[in-house]
Image 1 (cartoon, rainbow, N blue to C red):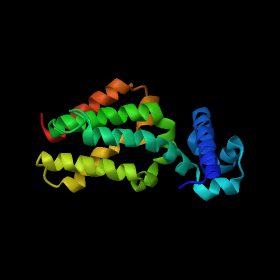
Image 2 (cartoon, rainbow, N blue to C red):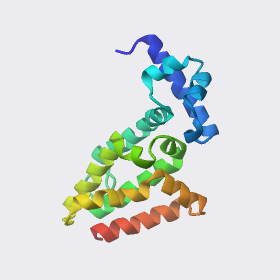
Image 3 (cartoon, rainbow, N blue to C red):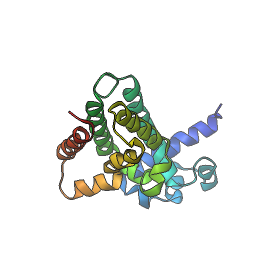
Length: 183
């Protein structure tokens, strides 16, 4: 059970991080910035979090867990009951929505090699692999990361900076899903 003062400090850190990550690029936020904004000492901050990326992941986690729940128990096509192609297309659409709404957090915690070490990436990998297997796709293991690559936060930011809108990105991923897994 979390001590009351630890819970208060955690809430202060997460509230401060939400503000800071909206105001500037999360990759530029330091532990000193977070401690100062939360009104706590750096040692207190370091007892719970190793770096700002870990704080970003803690904030993003609640949104990713909600999506995971919808994948497991939600209505089709995102949840069970639709074809693998429809489910992959729906997953892509949901991930684009998540990236669009929480891109600063994703950029702060899920970029580069760090992305592959998150629990969420493991879940997304298992989900995509299960869709590939259900579709009878040969060599599913080699394709999982390939199908998740278009969801890298830095790629999404690049596409948006280049002028692509959310609908165009979602439509392109829908075409990819259907081309890979059938109609």
